[in-house]
Image (cartoon, rainbow, N blue to C red):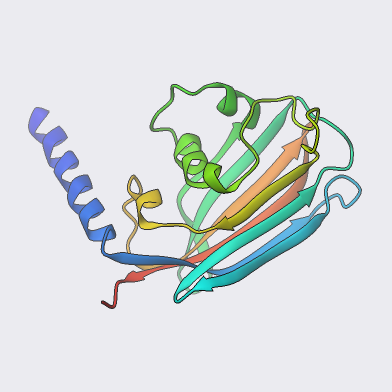
Length: 185
């Protein structure tokens, strides 16, 4: 049993080393609004900010005031003759995830750590009560190799699908395509 645990740990460490010599970049972004009266997107685009560096910008206006419960569905898809479900598909309570800071290796925390520096989504529910918090912003978000250190992904084209719901009604869906390739340097 102990040998198996060490073998798994060694495989994860080696796969993390393999991932560290790769480039990760955005290739496409699509934002769908399921209820335009609730939260339209003012901005949903990718922008080149440097040679081979592509940043994501999202600006969403929450029109119906504050919310106390929110669910997020986060899934990873890999391109195999079309996008197919790949490693995970999880739905979680966003408010509980933001309130619980001790879960160090949960998928929600890994994703949050990757985007928190670029976003104003940095507090627990209720969301929208604080001044200027009727907007959800992601500015110049660039996925870096260290964001994927816990996900040993092989090179290829991937899609992250994120769906958000408030009061048990799905409001938006965001499709983020990214490419993980070997570093050409």
